[in-house]
Image (tube, rainbow, N blue to C red; front, side, top):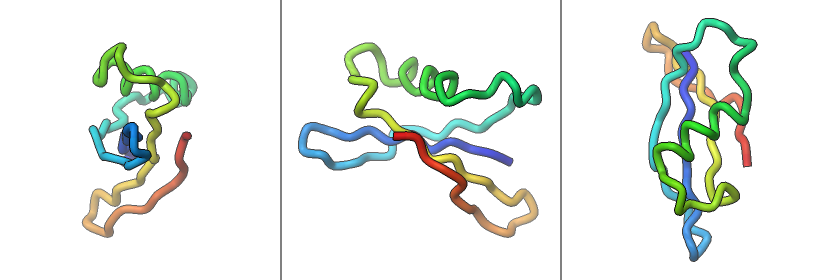
Length: 74
């Protein structure tokens, strides 16, 4: 299972986890960095600078084997 961890960088350059999105789309052609970041922007609102939002793609083993990081988008 794929999840995206969303982070926000504040004025003092500290990074804060602000949300986790579970990927439910079955059509992988619809998944893009822009579509993932669009969700983050919707959750955080229009006041947030898009340069301050980034996400990390994680794979979660559904059989209890743990998590692993795949990539990140800055």
